[in-house]
Length: 160
Length: 149
Image 1 (cartoon, each protein chain N blue to C red):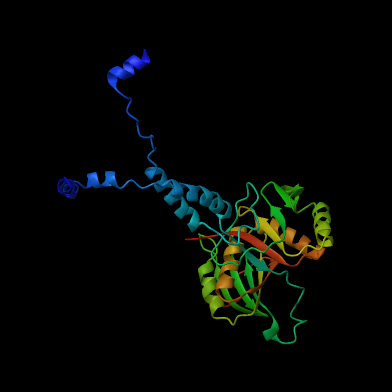
Image 2 (image 1 turned 180 degrees about the vertical axis):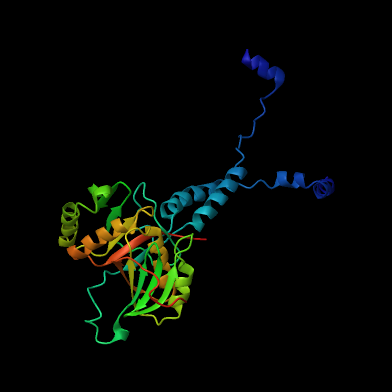
């Protein structure tokens, strides 16, 4: 009879499954304890923050050397201008899709990391400001000041 | 009568206790636990975004500091959850915001987390930041949603 059973389960595995009936109640009990704990500790949206300062009134007359002046990135609807002291390093005119912020990242990467002031014009959107902060941080500028711009005008300096 | 029936048919067979089939439930629980483990956060969420606020998206930012919250929504500006003024008149009415921020600074607020709607212009945000600066709150952070892609 035992030989007959063995040969049956070898040919039909479903018979063997009927024999091995696991008691899953302890597993269910563990899940019922685990799931409320995991739900309470889950974060479904990941938030991050850009830390920035409010730059002091530090004009060219107050800095001892030109190298001490922060790099200034002026962002306006017309485009982006990157200035160091009174030297215009690059002008990035805005296209149909808005400001060319990828090019901004490329220009900033060539500059030595230090202090940076982001001067933003009033009509520029908040999401553009956050993208600029992203690009500055990616280029190694962690000390960023956020200031109100005075209007970006292009055509005064070099193009990259 | 029942004894007669029992004698005629013999003893009633004992049925085994009915056991519910839990396998599919365990399968579902395993999928749920894997999903929850994937979104598990040890740090927890220190700041909750305000209702109706669309935060800007960032790809490279720092963890959110624990601090007081200034919310700039499309309709209202709130300081620490209390309504201060309407966003539409934010650039013209400076007194209410200045008073609220001065109260915050007097309480010895640490970092200030600014939540600003992404649909707004920098004009409104800049106005609130200038008011923060005048109140002596210069440890500022701008809240954003982390892009996980």
